Image 1 (cartoon, one colour):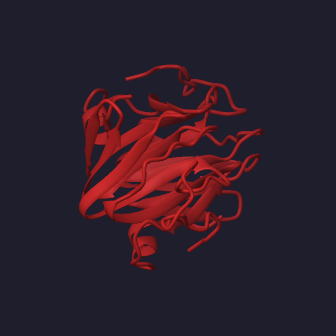
Image 2: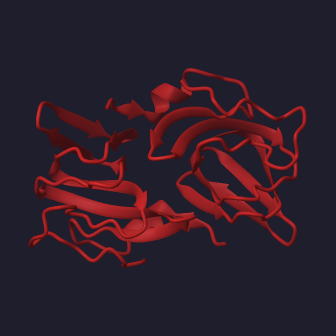
Length: 119
Length: 119
């Protein structure tokens, strides 16, 4: 039981597309990620995924629309829905998802990151 | 699938200690609450509970310590742990917990609020 400060945790890493776990509640995890550039199209077959933008701007492309998220915006990507995150400039995001989720979902590749790194 | 803006949602209510649901992921809910003054001692026997302070300052009293949370601070209250939130001035908080959780946990009373109000 310790207090977690989001900015302090964000200052601990600089690489992109590598979610870092900062907290766990029940079997859910809160992860910080810095994103820049294009991610890959993927889905998570078994779970919804929450994005909360802490700083900057990002977009999530879906098959039929593109959603722009700014600071203070939140989005729930439903399970099984193909999506591709993108940020022109660095964007800092809080993710919420069940323990064990892999960032690239069904699309393993160069951007697949460890799903068990705590900061 | 719609974008949710935390500030816009916060502008939609003014009462204290009445959590409002803004999003659901799987069987978990994201709720906004404005708090001011003293809450009641309570615990949630079956679930952890996440507090993320969006604006202002709050404290959570535990039996053996008091934790002060400022903007950008997050705290996971473990299940079964007695706690009492308090805020001297209004504080705006994002809560994350499973669907169906009652705000006063095991201590029903005047401050018990509906657990199914969406904004």
